[in-house]
Image (cartoon, rainbow, N blue to C red; front, side, top):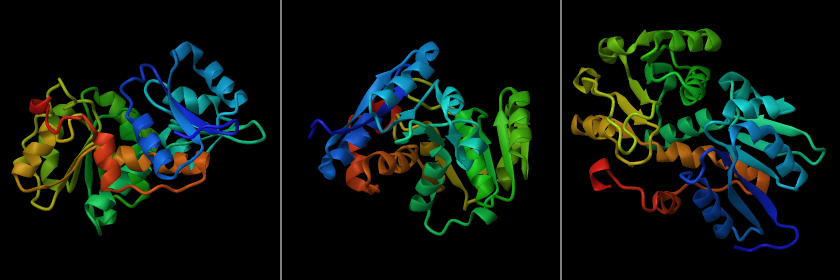
Length: 287
């Protein structure tokens, strides 16, 4: 790490934040490009979030990422948000401008699509009806990105159907809600299945769905990246389906913030992926 009196500073705000891989990710890029700067984990209680953001700005930080549970609070603290944040209803990237104003964006959906296009070159969103499991913040960001990218039909599946219905109303477009008990019947018409819930995260069961009902050309994605191969992805691969884990989304969503804070558009490559994954178990059984 190279630090001086003019070091550029950024970090990730969360509660808790010790689990975040973002310091490892941004630290890799800082070292690769020999940048005079640092990226720090910043644990902040929800009731102190707005004060903490303004304090970071006043201390000369260039900006910050925002993770659970602060993404909606980050939206409220911004002086200006871009179209992605407006569409997602949440902010995950803050930029502190020289004039003292705070700009917000949401790169989660962009990161998911970048990872999808890297994993499945030539994927045509306009020919890819999708089913998303979950109706939280990540689902909203990914759903918005898919719809804006031309997805012809999107169904949001959630255990509390009313939450999915509320999200559909906010998003607009060719999107519908369904309860968890309806998920299996949606699979034959699904070309992209995305788990945006925490199901499958280390220590939790994976979504239990009859993946044999998916078309042979379907893609199964999971935004969980601990473990790298979730139960859902393993089951999909066993059926010969194409899969996408959560790590590419994590890596790609970080690029716009790094570019804004440190002045370089970094590359997402295999060396980065291996480093960031580090001690993450490949499967839940390997943990």
